[in-house]
Image 1: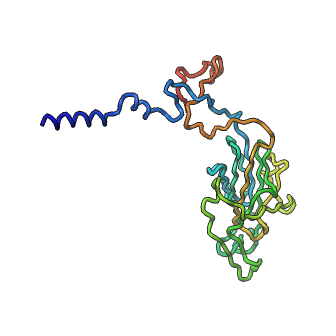
Image 2: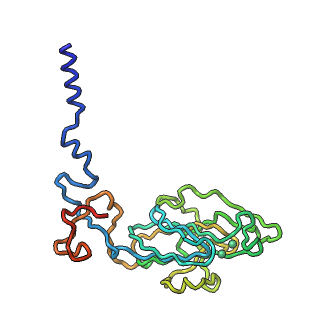
Image 3: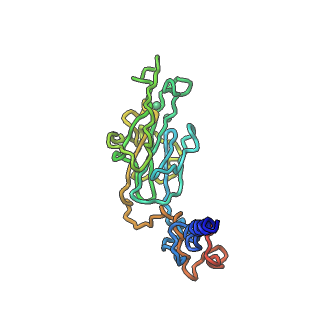
Length: 260
Ligand SMILES: [Ca+2]
Ligand SMILES: [Ca+2]
């Protein structure tokens, strides 16, 4: 009986985590035992760049595998979506661009018209849409432009087509279309698209759902930018002393606790 009791105490002692172990388990990833931060500061709006995107008719934009922006108006009017993004390079841009079309006929306006597509993008680092992008049609019609017996053909959406490591080597290059061909509407002219080109797959009339991909290896404007991708796994560095941490000039939050 005494032997059993001794064994039970030993096992319980072995299974009980030490205070050090408990502390390590509770420690956020990236935080050192001394409580020192890893030196990565918190980003500010100055670290962001603007993404201007226009599609005829709508789009979903993924960057580095994450959904970043969805066109808030699927059909009309043709709006511009302008969002702030935190860039990280190499940057994989993946877009699903959709022309308004009946899924059964490929036509629009009560099957009376073959509509055209079109997509253009410009980022604040100088990245633009052009013929270097990859394109793949996934739904098209009316096949052969036959509006008397309109039919649509589609292929399954490629699995993880927006992922960073997706292999798009079999895709063709995007085709560039002139501004006259796409005939963008008012909001396009109110935003910065200088240097960007309208792109689509090979047939801007019949291809109705198109996937586009492009990898930006380094910022075209050559600016050094901090990669904040891992921000959620580290303790950000405290603001500099004397810095204006909060509105009202009261300085950084006491104790430097996160305020997110
Ligand atoms: Ca179309
Ligand atoms: Ca259209």
